[in-house]
Picture 1 (tube, helix red, strand yellow):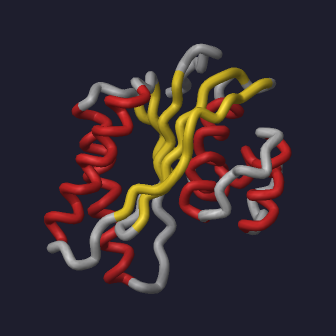
Picture 2 (picture 1 turned 135 degrees about the vertical axis):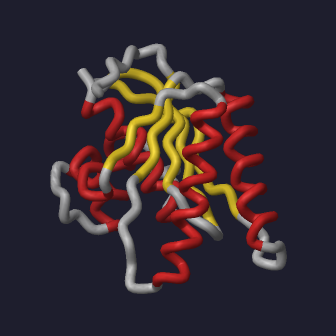
Length: 164
């Protein structure tokens, strides 16, 4: 299902993680996207697994309460060789999806390859290429070099470029 993105809509994009969850808040149209904020939510490694999952839900709720997004985007999981880590990230993604759903936000999901295409035009772009293009697109050298935050910004951009 395709959602039409209007220039006044606010996109909350989330790159799921367990230790670090990248986020970006973006508005504007395809020709002139405007970055509102980006960064990472973090969980405390000393906390229990359940406490960390709860912290993710609380962090996402705070982002929603602060920025009042009209649509959300979440990156689909790319499974790594480390099954233990993949399971934790999958659980964190479930918490993120549930929180967004409970807050009545429509959600779009994109593959990591689609996110790279939105930022660079190539699904095989590396992290450096994505970061370079984000700096050009947003005309700023202040774009975070933190992978998770940059991934979330690319994800937000994907929402704008995939919907006309």
